[in-house]
Image (cartoon, rainbow over all chains, first blue to last red; front, side, top):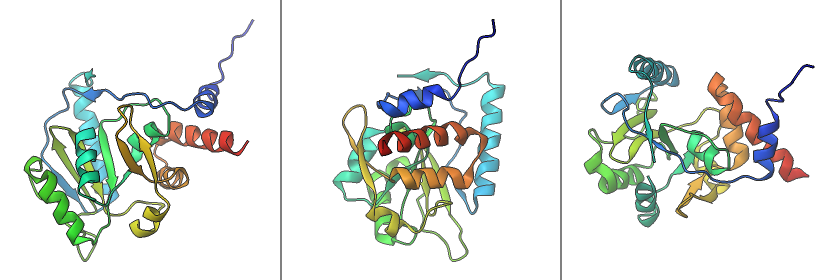
Length: 64
Length: 149
């Protein structure tokens, strides 16, 4: 017997009964200074680099 | 972050929450590393007020948009978390227009947050359509559909 999972089912369930769930805070983001960007391309490139750094450090720890 | 939003509300700062945190306040359980705020690009008084109110936490001042689109997005690590200010948002008209149809959502602690409405949030997500936006788009479409029934 094949088991199938409907990946989209959860969106319908949450959409029918939306609840605000608290968002934990990242505890160990790599340190960076404030930045100004003139385009979304530059911003996204910077963010991709930040994600790479996060991956290299083994991810982010979240705290309440 | 509620502290920042309460300061914005108390000082009548013009802002609208966008991005992942705005999707979360629509009821989608998700994480986000930052808080994205759409602000009027050329409202120098508003930008000056933001600098007055939270400037001690910003290591460089927030600037209005430049003549050639400089400073379109500005990101700041702060004690409250990462704040990102957007002077324009792909898929959306100017701030003044979006502000007219904005909505207020409470956080889990009851802080009232001014947010772009669901249609604008969906338009912004669809305009960018990064891989990581796909689930947000699915949720927002499902919520719209549920509301129409």
